[in-house]
Image (cartoon, rainbow, N blue to C red; front, side, top):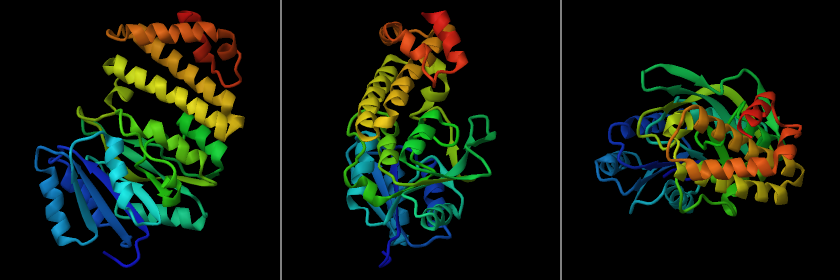
Length: 314
C-alpha cells in the first residue's frame, strides 16, 4: 500500500468471473497511481473471488474482502468501512474504465475544489453496439440544489455511482441501505444534497456493460417492470421527498413533483405495454395521481407530455 492514498476505488463482485478481470485490469492500469482498490467478494459461488485474490497477490494496492452474500449496499458499506482515501470512486464488476479515468476525475475535483466530480460514459449494449451516455462538451459547476435537480432530471448525469468521484467526508453520516436492490437511488441524492459543489464534465471515461444479468435491467427494458421494483422505487422516492424537504427546503415542491412524474411515467408504460403483475402499484399510483391531479397538472415542472398522459390515465 502506498503511504499516501488519495483515492479508494470500491468494487463489489458477485458471480461475474467472465467480466471481473477486465474491470480489475482497467483500474490497476490507471495513469493515476495513488489509490487503493478494495474488492468486495459478495459471496460469489464462481471464481470471481479467486480471480480477485490472484490480482491482490501481485498488486499491494488491492485488498479483497470476502463476505457472505448481501445486497449491493451492504457490500459497498463494507468497502467504505475500511477505505483510507481522501476520495471514493466506484466501479461495477462488469464495466471498465479508460486509463485516465481516475486522473480525470481527481483533477476535475481538485481544480474546482469540488466535493463530487463526474465524467461522461458509454454503454455497450447486448448487440455489441456502444452508445454515448451523458456525453457533453461543457463543464458545469453546480451547488447542492442544482446538482440534485440535475440528478433527478437526468439530462447531464443520473444517480449511478460509477462515473463519480466523491469526497470521502460525504460518507461520514451517509451509508448505502443494507436491504433492497436499488442502492444508488436510495443514497446518491443525499450525497449531492450535502455537497457544496459538484463539477460535471461530460468526457467519456467509463464504459457500462448492458446484459441480461444487470440489476438495473428493468430501468431500460420496461417490459421487465415488476411490483417489487415499483414498490421499492416508490418508497425511496417518498423518502427522498421527505429528506430533501428537510435538508434543501427550496426543493420541496420539485421533489414532490418528481414522485408524481415517476408515477405517471410508470402508469403510462404499464398500460401501453400491457405489463402484467403490477396491478397493485399501478392502482396505488393512479389513486395518488387522482388525489393530487391539480397540483401535478399545474406544477411549473410538469411537462406537456406528462399532462397528456394524465389526460389519458386519469
